Image (cartoon, rainbow, N blue to C red):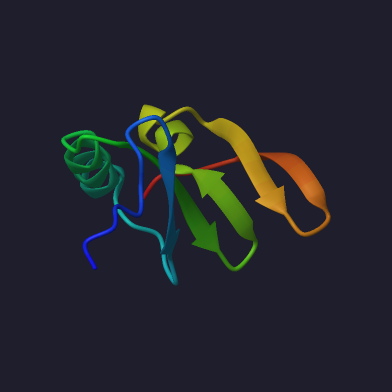
Length: 80
């Protein structure tokens, strides 16, 4: 009982499933809250078409990397 499951030298992989787009400012708030922990959190936003790194999404750049089951693709995003 009481065994640590994450070490400070490792990151925690977090998957956020999105059924519909979430406003950029809301995602930035989530990303900011995740940085307030003692461990590094690597968050991925999973959509029906693939996954995008939260850190890329919150930068708000119009082109980013989508990781799909068929491999990575560069995509253009219009933010809600």
